[in-house]
Length: 183
Image (cartoon, rainbow, N blue to C red; front, side, top):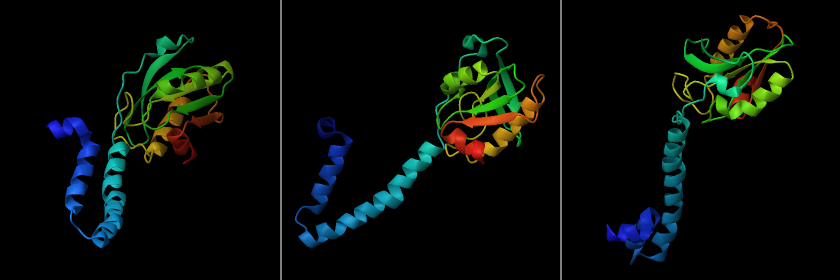
């Protein structure tokens, strides 16, 4: 415990390598380097990546009234595959509408400046929490692989809103949300 407190986890790893290679021939030490790199590349990195992709924090999202925009309301809708999605809907004045999608590990709260800009331009805006993010249900996938179903559900929702022309619906995405919109 005392060694750990002085060296930390990286120091312990260094001590382990030093102890393992002490007294070994130089040739064994040099040959171990590609082995260690292979273990990191094909063992450790994929495990860390998988953990980051399938886990996202679920912070609380402020209610739509906090936006201070007329008619803003909290909504829930179903993605095309039935997953429950949470969002904000703000009516517009031009007949056009936009689905607003946040980036990986984010929430609709990360899109407030975009929402305000689109609303000021007259768009009705639906800002969503992607599945597995924020207040939406479903399995997290930070690569956005199921985002097509989310966008389809959002478009279906917007087509049912008064004042929205079904032929004038756009999608605006940030990072992962842009990938989902493009698909």
